[in-house]
Length: 422
Image (cartoon, rainbow, N blue to C red; front, side, top):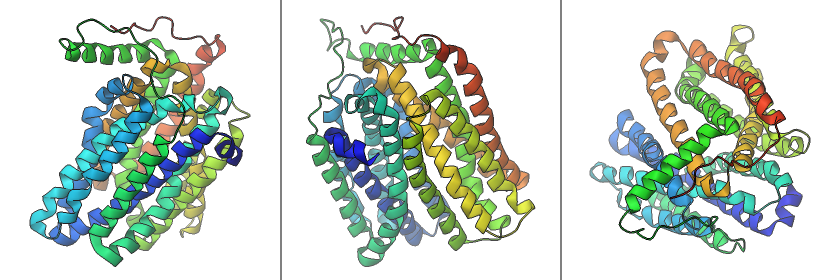
């Protein structure tokens, strides 16, 4: 994996930009909710910060993909990162409860810009590495979030204590500017494949955007592999929404833990993700992406079920910490394989739309399952609810093995039936 970073200059620049900006995100995501709760004393006001991050992905994610397929992907990433730095400026004004409302539009705008940068990067990646290194590159990208999650929260807490929310916002803005500069130095062309243009672009712009969005959905429907990937992602997103709410309850009620124990598990999750990035890069050379995707989902679900249920047999947290580290390995592997499958199966001119649809689907179902878990989780119990998540991954792994077998055995060919741009 290190050789890939050293050999592929453009990929190394994009990877480093992503790592730096993600660290900045984690710095802010730790400090801002703390500041909001300090000023308001309201759990609802604090939860609204999280909602303002999720809502733009649901509303804009799929449509943003249309524009990612129209615009130069490299330029899109540069501009969006620069705008995210500017969008953070109002956070300097939050010095009282009356000013807390600034937090919500700032987070919403930042999340809206992210709906352009993420599919742009995913669509751009096949330009930066050869096909046989694509899964390894995706594994390295998945590693970014784990590295950022390991370092960012600690840095965010220290910066918040040293200089308050203003210092945190300044550092986060700086990370976006550095990321923009790094991506700007990439030499590979970010221009999408040429599309047919109509004479009356201006007059029918909205109609054309709508038609192109529908065309992207048709590509998903006509590709068995992409349809299965999207369906499996939807199922696992429901489980992730449940996990986000019920794991805190599990720590509190099942293992009699508190904030320290929750922090240990979060750090263990990050360590597992780092290990997963390394292992996934090695395994990617030995397993086809569809098999890696299936096995990653299956092993992830089995380890999750072991994690959630082990306290029924053995007490303490040591085994739980070991299990959550192990879970990170198949988790990263399955995500890297999923990205590779889409990048390999979807023509360049449709990739932004497909990744946008993937993000919107996942965000919407995560929000729904989060609300459901919050409403019934205390009644049903944390172990039963979390078993839904683990079971969903096991079922997803089996479905991928079964449903993709025929498609994978067939000769891979471009999506010849894909609709033509108008």
